[in-house]
Image (cartoon, rainbow, N blue to C red; front, side, top):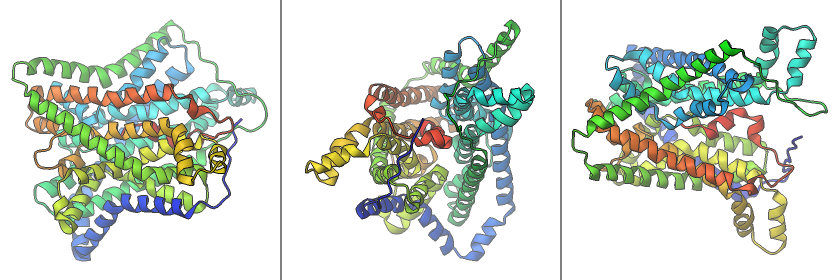
Length: 538
């Protein structure tokens, strides 16, 4: 039994002001992009918008997203069913295998595939790699949803005479669909915002065309217009998913204890086919990249590895991502504290505006900050501060999601007690709520670090001259097809990215304080899309 305690008191004006300032700062890139586009004049905007190239790019991007959505569902649905509803052997192992592709940047996976199969190119090749990189976004929440569905729903449907297929269509699917829809949204947004994969396979999707317009011809108007079109497509996906999810949500009512659905007992042939399916998916998503990177690493030993460049790239990745995460945390805390304690319409509006970064591709934020710094503050162009700010804008929703949930788990009465003992509002929050919520807040910050390390287009646009990261070094070598020399950077990136993930697991496992409230409500248990987003990798 879960109970949500809604704070009916008006939130402090100071907290609202701090949250509004955070939202305004995070919205700077998009607002300036709108200003930059409008200043070009309507004739120039209309001309760029109605070019044949714009229509072709839109069709290509929509086709790629559609293929990825279909592919993710085709892989995720049987995978989730095998892991959640059958007695397939090795379920725990295969569940880990299903999640591991999230630790591999999609452009690293694309680099590994094209190194093994040099003839790969086009929308089909890009869709294949994107599906293998993003299907966990759908499979993991869908597996959790199928395991959590109360067996009573399906038993009641069977008692009314419905067959297995009818039960699946009329009961199981509506209950599991919100989780699947949330994962599909993440996969679609990831596909729209991905630059490295489409560039490696030479697909003229929005991200590649925008970057080419900026880098090759420095056509600012075309790049700005296409960036806004890309943002509109991303927001359209968010709206569509929200409408579908809103019509499909179900809650259990009535007394009694929910029971998980019994696992289907597969026969020997079914087990063999199920294991073969799971092994095949793991080989394609993990085996091929692992084999390719290992082979290329062994071949790279024939050429001399510049250890200094590798160390410099590691330092660059770590420093920029840590600074970006620190800034994201600074912006996220007022919003998270407001959303965790108060539930008015203005609070929901502020929180919704803060999640706009959920739909902002890296190439859009990078391009907007290039325009902004050159026009307003040229001295800041291509500085570490601007690059860190781009990371904070892009990954702010990750920090907000984890921080909000962690703060919501702390009973408000503890902070009120500290206030009654003479502590001021800020000190009471830091010593009580902030201290107890710190593991979840730190997990969100580490998630930002993890994601920022792999951001490519914004880093290419905004990095200081001579400043390299693992992502940019890998990209520069991949562009000239020096796959052997790129392998050490790819493997180092994966190893380095695993450190924040390991720390997150240890911190959360050692922090029972976050579960201390018996009457808490975890918003993510109701809003499955936010669970997937907080736990996912952009």
